Length: 270
Image (cartoon, rainbow, N blue to C red):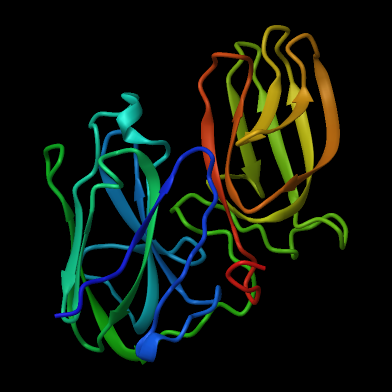
């Protein structure tokens, strides 16, 4: 049995360098299809494919080469979730993979896997009752690489492709809202943003609070869309570079994380 290789990625600073090794040691490209394992803060997960299509118990997906992407909304070791770390395993013909996301210190783990045709695979985590288990099958049809940038990664994730852009220079329009009570949200085409294709985005922020603003941040980078004192609508363009981002309303407020991925067709480090 071939064990899946994996590399855990710290939450901050988030610099994701993928080296996906395929048959004969060849490096795969960023266009490899993905199978996403998306955890909630309650320590349970769902499975999804590129584009957000759910993979549920008893379903069937094309066989072939994938990258398995395990995501948590933040590092569980921070104490904000219902567990300190995940205990995820993925098994089946030719695959034996497990991760704790570096004992909860990381929020993402990516590994190349090869799913055989007409086989059954099982994803499970028993960290928090009830045990989450998804057993699904593969078909006799081989998976094909995404032909355009996809922003999926989690079931509710919206696409960040250029088709939704407001101009050739942006990949889409993000809509940020700040409620009168200071609650923040970020959407693309009406869907909650959790994963986007890296690049420039138009941003429209509707701020109805006089005590909270809307700030984007990643590592040492910070972009303030609106300040705490501002009320009204603000429009800007922001470069969401490759990595992990988050947004928040004011210092000390809850941070909401999302991932930006390499556009299809680019090199691993380009």
